[in-house]
Structure formats: C-alpha cells, structure tokens
Image (cartoon, rainbow, N blue to C red; front, side):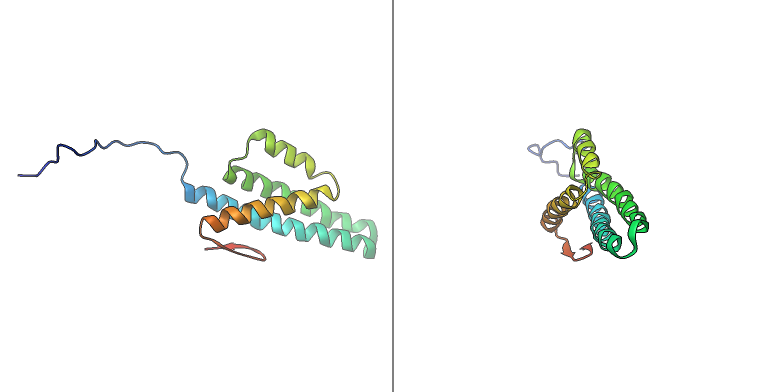
Length: 126
C-alpha cells in the first residue's frame, strides 16, 4: 500500500514560458555576432583610409552581421519590437552604430556572466 501525504501540494503541468537556457543561448550567439560586427566596422573605417571607397563593402558586411546579432540578442534579452526597431535605425548612423554595439555588448556580457558563462574577447563560453 502506497503512503499518500494528505498535506502535499497538488501537482500540475504549468507552462513557465520559454526555456531560459535557450534564451541565454540566443544572447550568447547574438553577442558573438555583435563582436564580429564591431571588428568589421573598425576594419572598414581603417581600410577606407588605405584602399578608399572599396572598403565600404567591409562596412556593409559589418552592418548585416550587426543587424542579425541585434535581433538574436534582442530576442534573447527580451527586447520589445520597438526597441529592436530603434536599434536597427541606430545602425545606419555612423559612429553611433559603434557606440550602440558596444553598449549592447556590455549588457550582454553582464547577463551572460550572471548565467554562469565565461565571456572572453570573442564571445561567451560555458
């Protein structure tokens, strides 16, 4: 005969929302892309002085990588659609885009460290 505790709380399957490990994974992958975008933007600025307008292709690649990274990181950190749109608009303003990417990288670093990740120069590792 099984012992039943009459004071035990009832058990129910309750949906607690998105899996936190999946969300923090999005933040980690988005942060890597944002770091690569920062490096591409800096390389594009430096190359413009050396090879001229052809270096804008590097800047364009940095823009695409930053947009993808912002969407991943924003969805992982719970940004609203309006915040994501504002961040996308800021990516088209020279020099403001680098400052925005650095601020986002800082916020992602603190969030990842809280979750137990080690964050290095090129992103997070468990």
